[in-house]
Length: 228
Image (cartoon, rainbow, N blue to C red; front, side):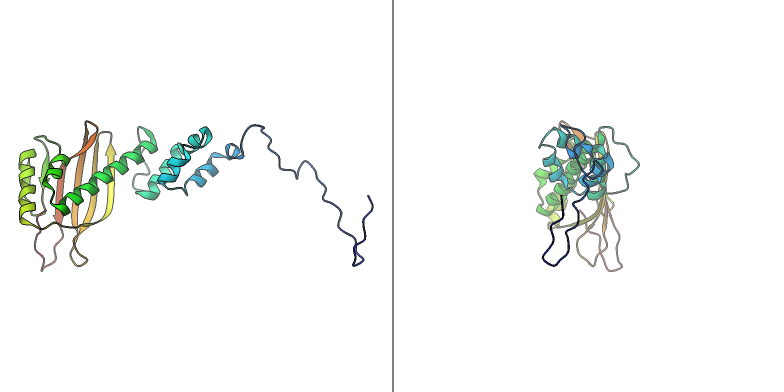
């Protein structure tokens, strides 16, 4: 077809040569572009999602459920939300289950500090496993062994001390099937040194229960031990 002159005297460029190499087509009829992405790209894209978004994505359709349940995606989310310390482990039930269990453990650990703040003895009693092997070491260095002794120690703490609103940092968890331990630093104020705390939990009858609490504190010269 002859070229049509332009008003400025020039001629338009010829139309592009449409060949098979320049046309982008779906070479797999019935398969979405998402399914054709290489796994590494899919995992990288999903790594930008947070926990609620990844869960919602898994409920859209079978393709998204498969992508959102990918173990590498949950491993990346675990490292983003929690810690890189456990990069070398291989969770028995996969990273999705490990992530969910870690969230549950951190929730129970947070509840522990809320109980201390509110001085709620009944809630503390429900949190601890009713067993003779549970142990509690307060920041004073006193050791209490067995459920009854441990509860008596908390009753004394709550009767004697005001409720403490700890600021908890550097929380690290480790889970082995039905046991988990959490290490952290807890501050009462910006000037004082941190309490170094380890909490151990066991899973019984569908719930995580505390079986061990150990608190120690790094003191400055003008500080006194606070029992909690």
